[in-house]
Length: 435
Ligand code: PGA
Ligand code: ZN
Image (cartoon, rainbow, N blue to C red):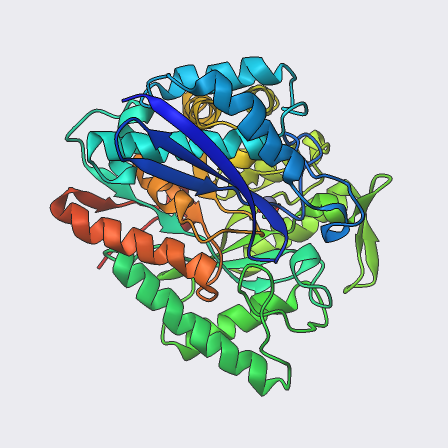
């Protein structure tokens, strides 16, 4: 089934900022669309998200040039290609762009088309999106599918919630529920109890960009205490049913070799930052730390990994930017044991698959992740199941663009029936104990 036509449009993401939507039409009556998400705490080596920089429109954030790159450059080159040849389509777009970071056509333009083609391929095959993703990824047919453990961001800070913690994300990790639907129920109950904990301190219960509460905490450690209280209130045992994960997004408060924590009124060296995080892992059931150090602080990452002795998942987000070369470097330098996977950091489906494969080859785990600016398309849900990722990061249990992902995962699980297997948390610290 060949591509007949591709159209594109400027629409809005969950923050009300412009984003790109591409629609792929096939010979016959089939069509599929895709919108791309957008980050706020972006890594400096991410593929380029093309913005118009026209101050008269959306304060420079318009994406009409990216839209034009789809309709005038990508569309004419892709028309006539077999839509199920994902690799060929992505290769053609990479060639047309011709840069290392997709700066000539924009990763937002290229990824919108790449995802729309993947979705169109599912229509051609007449299978659900996750199943076609699995086929494109090269997963053997008839194998069971892994339902991912979600890392659920219930307290927002940093760039996603001004006025709260310096650290960007405090997540709960339900490691022991028997099914994905039960996993969601447990987490939703904790989220409601957390609301009461926040309210009882006299704080507003407003939420940040990813749907977690964003209270004006007195320190960066305080959110951990709030979570422990909420778990207790909901009747769950920290360290057994729930673990905790962090994404400090440390590049955002790193300057000239120091980590500046305004909430704590301290500045830390890299080694001191590592010691603080290690101390927390000894006092709280923390199983995963993403970007605990700056994106260029390879030594800090390696020290944190060494000191937590592979009991804790050390995740590279800004560190790896979903780039296979950076992941190889990370393995060589023993800097992390997990790769956060964000398709828009690299810009095509094929390259995203490649990064997942490089991570696995080096024995690293993978988390499929949303961005802080999301769309109504629950892409990450299907993508995580299709690639057997084992973990997802899709935000809090609130706001429709986040809930859409949880709902999609629950639908997939129901549809799969016996072919769905709940993933285990792969590090000793969070080792799954299911009753
Ligand atoms: P971003 O945040 O989408 O704003 O980059 C998410 C993350 O850092 O994981
Ligand atoms: Zn991150």
